[in-house]
Length: 125
Image (tube, rainbow, N blue to C red; front, side, top):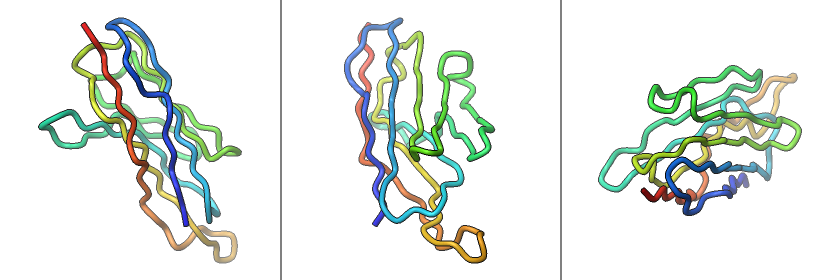
C-alpha cells in the first residue's frame, strides 16, 4: 500500500503565503517525479509544478516566480511554497507521485501513479 498525505492548505488573504506538504509512505523503493496539481470549481485539473528525483523543476506559466516546489528525498516529501497569492489560485491542490514499489537489479519497477486526497486552498480578496 502506498499513501500520499497532504497538509498545509487553508484560508489566506490575497498577497499572503502558504506552504503545502505531501508525504509519501508505504511500500516504496523509489520515487521518480513528484508534483502538485490543482482543480478549481468547474475547471479541469491542471499541473502546477513538478520536480524530478534529481531536483529538476517544471512550473505552469501562471505560477512562475511566485511558487517554488522542492522535495526531501530522504523523507519522501514534496513541498510547494506559494507566495503573493491571488484569489484566482483558489482550488483543491493535489499531490502526485510516480512511485516505484519494487526493484530489479537496482532499478525501480512496479510503478504506481499515486494521488493524495487533496488540500483546499482559499485565497480571499
